[in-house]
Figure 1 (cartoon, helix red, strand yellow):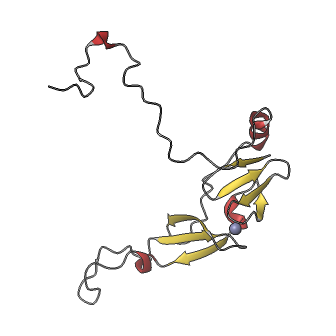
Figure 2 (cartoon, protein in one colour):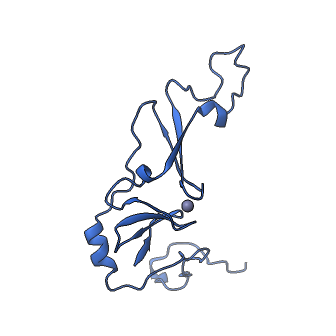
Figure 3 (cartoon, rainbow, N blue to C red):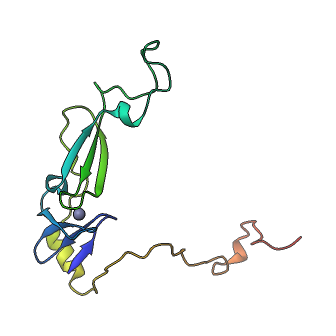
Length: 145
Ligand SMILES: [Zn+2]
């Protein structure tokens, strides 16, 4: 059973491994930070957020100061897909932004069918006329005047 976690990552529950959803590469233990299984590109933020003012004339240019901000880009080591990005102070370790209880995840998915692709583009069910109108909330549901 593989469980979709993000648009780029899933977990193989039997092997307990993070996997790239684009190329199926096994990355690192599902009990570890998935970023340890990825390539990291430590970007100068001025490359991404270009100065809006001439840096030769102004100290502050609306571009992030690389002494205070780095942009880390994470890539799959097999297919090169960008998996995640984050803004951090220089020297800060990668944030562990997903920390799942793998044993609970296994128990949760034991009785479920595997989902191979997340449903995309479905609107939530329309509930305009399901609720009680007796409380007089004041809108007309598009009634013509
Ligand atoms: Zn990949």
